[in-house]
Amino acid sequence: MQAWGRVIIQKFLYNTLLLSCLTLSVAYGGAPTPPTTAGAVTSVSELPPSSDLAEPVPQYRLEPRHRGISPQGTKVDSTLSFLWKTEPLNIGSYPASRSSPAVDETAIYIGADDGQLYALNREDGSTLWTFKTRRYEVEMAKKAKRERKARRAKKTKKVKKAKRARNYEYENHGIHGTPAFDHEYVYIGDYSGWMYALDKKTGWMKWEHKLGGSIGASPTLFEGKIFISVEYGKPDGRVFVLDAEDGEELYSTNYLGEHPHSSTSIDPGRGYMFVGANNGVFFCFDYVKKAEVWRYETGGAIKSTAAVTDDTVFITSWDRKIHAINIETGDLVFDYEIGGKSMSSPSYHNGRVYFGSHDGALYAVNALNGELVWKFDTGQGIISSPTIVQDADLVLIGSSNGRLYGLALKDGAELWRINFGSEITSVPVAVARSLLVNDQSGVVWRFDALPSADAESVR
Image (tube, rainbow, N blue to C red; front, side, top):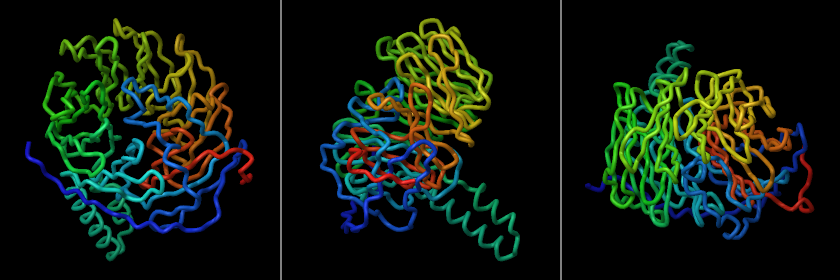
């Protein structure tokens, strides 16, 4: 395949600003607001050594079963110090879930809605390199056209039209998925239907593969294979399995009948993969035998990604339910009705399933019988998906109200919150003692947990 694309290597000269350390030691009900001043990358604390983020988060929700559990040893508690943030990476306001950070020993990889993939220095947030996908020029042209329409509408005093031009017409898509990486390469798809493999250190493109009309889902990486949901304009879609070495197609499913916004989840023991589509159908395929195993129909569009356990797979739907499905048979184990649609991907830990809803609540239900364990209301819709920090007995969830919450796994009690002032639709990433969040505007934030003795209480 012919190499294409421009890689811009940016040697970012970073000057540390000697400001006081903002520390968040937040009791129930507190709402500290991180600094929101515009500008380039800003550091407000002495940066920790590289070993503090050595544990990788190599793909969306950490691993191919997508259970949403942080790595062992992660300690993100109620004492958080703000370290740095980037300038906004997104250029549009399309109301969909955004790219989440993927983290290795040296870098944070994240996509933006202008079609660029960024590699950020994890210690100070500076840009190591950027890669412009084929979608980049499309998104920049859409942005320019939207701005011209807004200026014309403002000039003619058609305020409503100007607002519509800014918010609804020619919205930017670019990259919404979360990158996946192995030892050498990082993988991402764009909204023009191309899949890319890039050198982690330089951003040099090893291969690209045109798969379909658009890719909004995150790639799943397992045993040298890339599993990716691809959309077509009918609307329709398929799942592709690619060789990570050269991008060659190993298997593609039959057409699904609608767009698959859902990323692909894997059952490693059975060789199964799971994906949902906007027609409400949830599919199970055997990627070894290259055949459909079963399909299960929900009552609404599926936009979330499934969580896989030993015997059960969990998926949320716009039918206002979470569905627990037997992996072997495809039969319903239970469903639990909630107060709104859900596109929040469920997390599984110790016999409970956690997921959010458009009704603004985070739910915890018993994974065996679907009984409600607890419910926490944020007051505004949840598109984000929960992250379990098992060593801290904590669940993290972002809300459209611009806040990230740290809740007790046991009973959902609020332990702390951070107000970002921008919707949180991506998945928060906790690794070692660090918390990474990408807000809706594309500002990437890093916080670190500090010993309680070093912290000052901020209310």
